[in-house]
Length: 92
Image (tube, rainbow, N blue to C red):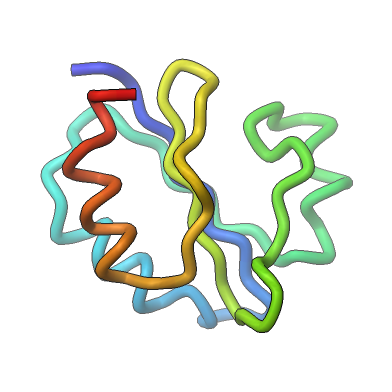
């Protein structure tokens, strides 16, 4: 299995709990999860390259990014969309 990175950007602590719940239900043995407050993304991107310029989708409290080998799916705030992305991530 390829190594996957899932980034969840949150407006406030706990805002991404529904997205994290989807990740916990998925079988992804080779993955890294990063939960980052939106106001800390730029600072932490200097150390963790996958953060790049990720942020919140307009009007959302949490946004998830599923990445594999440096390529990311479209960001989503919807748990059902995230579940689909996790299932299809190896097709990237």
